[in-house]
Length: 199
Image (tube, rainbow, N blue to C red; front, side):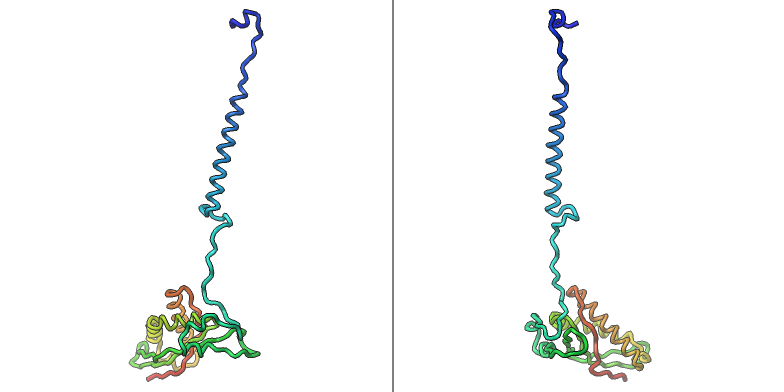
């Protein structure tokens, strides 16, 4: 027995619960700090799905309705600006069509023959005039892509209406690839032959 029990005093056990309450309080404080830090990192965009990410502004060209003002018309040169003027009509496509005429003809050998092809081209877009501006700005790269497509065309293909239409589609695709690589957006809807000569 202890000395206290010998003297006749009652022995009261020491409470151990006080230490547990303190430890639980410390754990709650640490959880709160950790949760606050995690919330702060989430707001800062460190964790995906926070709902506070910056949304990248869409700066790609926009479709222009007939009769609607194109805010980029003033940036294009005089020749393209005239092509972008639109008189609203009742029928057809609801979007304005603007045209870009390439300054010089394209000449190339045809595939697997000694024949030559010479074409004069124009391209159309329903998008705002930035597409016209980009066609002018990147005309050298576009011309190179067009010549590659022409050189991969057979004489038999170019002699049929279906072959000519397929060539127009391939040219449209090639031009859009150049613009997408250079500007991040194509926007050319179609390519047209202003003249076509095979020799």
